[in-house]
Amino acid sequence: MPRTITFREAVNEALRQEMERDQSVIAMGEDVIGGSGADGEMDAWGGPFGFTKGLHGKFGDRIMDTPITESAFIGAAVGAAVCGMRPVAELMYIDFMGVCFDQIFNQAAKFKYMFGGKAETPVVIRTSIGAGLRAASHHSQSLYPIFTHIPGLKVVVPSSPYEAKGLLIQAVRDNDPVIFCEHKSLHHIQEDVPESSYAIPFGEANVLRDGGDATIVAFGFMVKKSMEAASKLAKEGIQCEVIDPRTTSPLDLETIIESVENTGRLVVVDESNPRCSIAADICAQVTEQAFKSLQGPVKMVTAPHCPPPFSDVLEDLYIPSPEKIAEAVRSLN
Image (cartoon, rainbow, N blue to C red; front, side, top):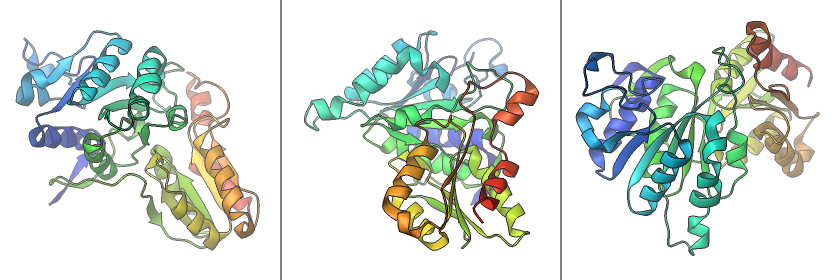
């Protein structure tokens, strides 16, 4: 039966259920035990955001605290995956990818290709993305387009607790390396989520709202912003179809193009920076494959091409808002 739980609790439940189902699933990262098993255990965080709270008591050594060296524990996770385990490694912030990027794009992403399909690397790298929490430039970026660019990686950007649980279960079961991007502004969001285990297939977009006037494509936290914009536009008589692709790689371009063929208009909302972004990629592909269906130019609503600011006022301006999304849609009429 569905219950109302948070995004954080949904991820925790997905990890617990998969670890109960499969003994080869392990979890590692900085402070993911968080003091469990020691004095003060009741205050154990379970990772910097509390996603692994309580798991050490159930699974013991299958939950591992690591030194503060991303290159080491991400490399260890990749190596464990090649040797038959299914590691879930927590990279605290996606901004720290620079420390362990070689292990991801030069090793994990390429093993299957370099060894004729015989080597599998079923590793999941969970990481936090997004601005809005006043964490400044080193802890607030949305860098999933960089991973999307790399062949061999699958990239997931869940938009709600229900999506997070089902997509993470699919990620753990997948035989390819998966980058699982959790927006920090979603951690406390609540939603009805089934207690039973379920998996959401990769590459299948979710159409959250039907409409015939414009197509809005959005990822992660931007899905919530886009739904708010669509509700506001509906009061003005503009009906938008809102699509959450769920994964950037693989990308369900077919659903997006089918929608654009119906609406004739496209707005893509993406918190990453505009140059070489997911928004730019989708706009380019739709323009190439469905140009005759477009009734006007495609539009991108993104963060500006600069690092996330620390200033409260500037950070609020940096993040795409429902007002900016609605204005982009209006500009197409």
